[in-house]
Image (cartoon, rainbow, N blue to C red; front, side, top):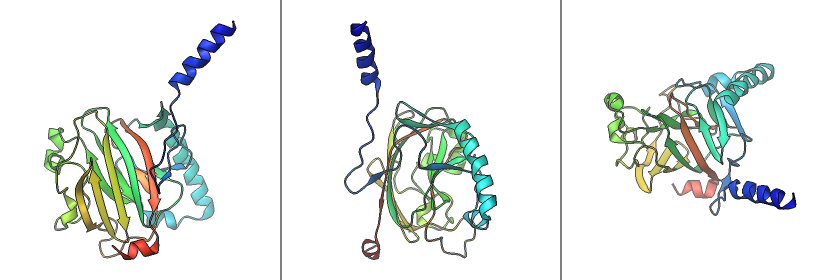
Amino acid sequence: MFVLMLAVGLGTAAQAQPSPSAPAGFTTIFNGKDLQGWRGRPGGGGVFSPYVEARFTAEERAKAQQEWNEDRDKHWSVKDGILVSDGHGVHLATDRPYADFEFLVEYRFMGPNGDSGIYLRSYPQVQLWDVDNVEAHKHGSDKGSGGLWNNNDDNPGKWPLVKADKPHGQWNSLKVKMVDQRVWVELNGKVTVDGQILNNFFDRSLPLLPSGAIELQTHGTETQFRNIFIREIGQEEAKRH
């Protein structure tokens, strides 16, 4: 009996996933076990304005968040240390807002025609998609991921500087830095956006809010995320950008 229990214990230990280890200066914001630190926020391919959310009363906010989290739990899960979206339902947003930051994440699409993105302060977005999705080529998927797709057409940040996506099903490594209104993006070690302004999706005439949630978009295809870290940028460092 003891030998059997020991064998089972060793097997369980062997299958356990190690906790994510943050790079120097970064903080882990996905613990590899559950959705702690993350809340649901309306999405499913749609865009929910942070200005509307800011006008909620405390009671409205509590009621809405309960509903969003119930939807979150239907469509987001953690499996073997990986954050999994089934492609439907709400976005997954950080509980707390961030101002200036550097954000790291790895992602991959598990189904065909993948389409996702990273919302910055709840503004869309660093675009992520399956570059082999021929139907989406008319929208620019053939140019690659890592651009600020919702930007004005004349904004150089709208399209990635290089096509750096890995083949379908492989992990892609994304680094996003945001300081004030400007964004820098690296995909798999290659610069795709170099300090361009993120246009305000909700009102082009307004600057972005100074802080807000970071959101993982869900848009119809199972998408997986892992190794999610953040480094907040202080005022002195921000002044150098």
